[in-house]
Length: 143
Image 1 (cartoon, rainbow, N blue to C red):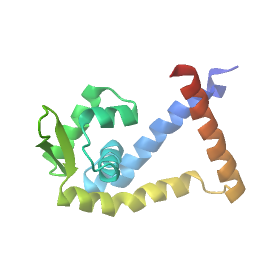
Image 2 (image 1 turned 90 degrees about the vertical axis):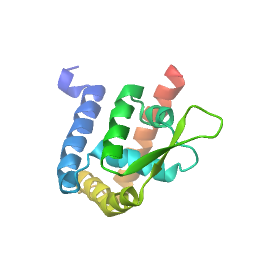
Image 3 (image 1 turned 180 degrees about the horizontal axis):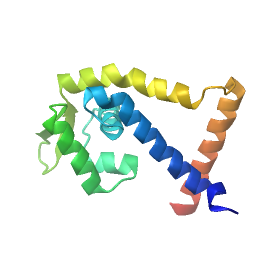
């Protein structure tokens, strides 16, 4: 099998392409795709989200997550507040972070529409079924 035909190579290539093009869509807001993803995660997990939770969810290193969180703090999109009786800090969206997440939700939808242009509803269902099966196979084998 040629390298260009390998599934992992294609998935990595498409992931990088999505991030690059997503960053172009978000450039005027001064945020990156990963920063928006983290803000969306915080919004949908408001309990006591911590850096370790974000790193685990996205499957990235703790240090990478720290860089994203610091950048969002510098942009006044999030803040960290102490957790009672713990050394950890929960991460919350500021009102500016909420606004930016709201304003850019449609850009994520726009990117998905671009990616799925020309697919029938049935093809979309099949694609997502296959992607879920790939994910399940990896979870079964490596967890």
